[in-house]
Length: 302
Image (cartoon, rainbow, N blue to C red):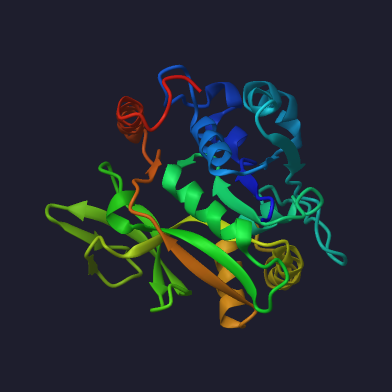
């Protein structure tokens, strides 16, 4: 069996939350979403966790989050830096915005040599999602051609907010459970008894709620790093002077699929995904976590 690593995209946390000390607790003893994510990964069988962070809050992140897991799982850190670009490219003087999730994953190239799962730091994916992605990655061929990747897919209805619209990647999945494409809908919300997408630039669309969506939980082999480097160079050729542009991992994965460089197996789960899109979501997530604790899914203290 392969050893499997969890890659946590956390480089944006400091800017979003105004510093790690303001990171919202969702558990009864101050637990954050990351605490539950790493807990789920450990019990699923993951052997290492790599936190991708900004180097300027390394000490705070280690003391607040990373150190508590060192006795349970190997902990590594990688740093997403704006100025780290492929040969031939240099950072534009006025660029401040991060380069995106694809660039963040590339930051971990030196510390990841095994199959790995990628998650957002502030998303609650659920125990079953980690079990499914670990099972796939623990037995996947690391040098297949095309590359063998995977993605955890959720029913759309299990990922909505009660407090406003959300963007979701609607997945087209083949009869063989392979991802064919992802269509990003940017204004999905519940309106009375319907789920609709009403973005101005997109035609109004009524959705069933059963559609499979991507919540940025991916499974890769180390083959991805060289593939991303090539795609990131191509991205920079077209976008280096566009200061709002970002190199997103779904864009890269779709490119690899359409180019027959990789296949992506969709691992469907019926679990509830939780996230704090709106400030009103926080109390809902806290209540949901308490319910999971009461049902025995999680201990009262992590």
